Amino acid sequence: MAAPYDLRFDCGRICLDLVATTGGAAERPAGLERLTGPDQLAAWLTGAGVVPYGVPLDAVDALWVTRFRALRALVGRVVHAELRGRAADADLAQLNAAAGAAPPPAVHAVRGPDGALAGTFPGPPDCAGLLAAVARDAVALLTDPAARGLLRQCAGEGCSLVYLDTSRGRRRRWCSSEVCGNRERVARHRRRSRKRPDQVAV
Image (cartoon, rainbow, N blue to C red):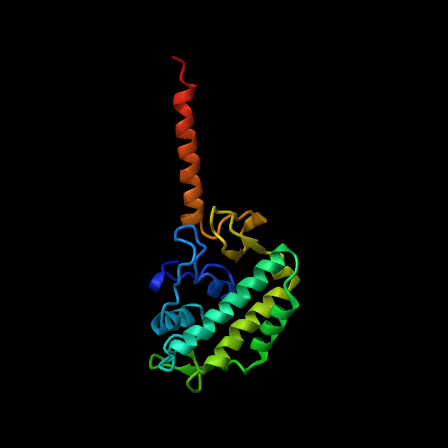
């Protein structure tokens, strides 16, 4: 899905989409930072569905960015550790603390000028509440056996993204068929092309 600032929202969960805002995708060098400032964070919050479209995010500043990057690192560590076996108790304690640090803002239904209902917040959201919403999504994911069983790490070379495999037959191998999948198909084609001249008899 195309998005401003090269953000991705195709990992299947809000918390995984947050982890995807840093490097690790094969189409970008490792260490790429997508949350480079308040505008990028505000775009991510709206695009990921943490904040309904149209809710002002004027309070987002550099401190918000720093705090969301810290939560991203924590969620990334916990998810990858759980895929390999077991997350550190200290990291789980931090994640639980983040989830309970503040109540996430409640979405209210309001009627727009055209008569359709839309979601909004009753007041300006605060950073702690939005962080808690993302942390709670991570806790819910990791404690749901069915959802947890769908966690996969991308098979693309150099890609560390984790996603939920909801494909038919659970055979999805890449975080993105257009990105990592396409790179693998191109690489396979090049390997075959290099072999063909050696197979021609002289």
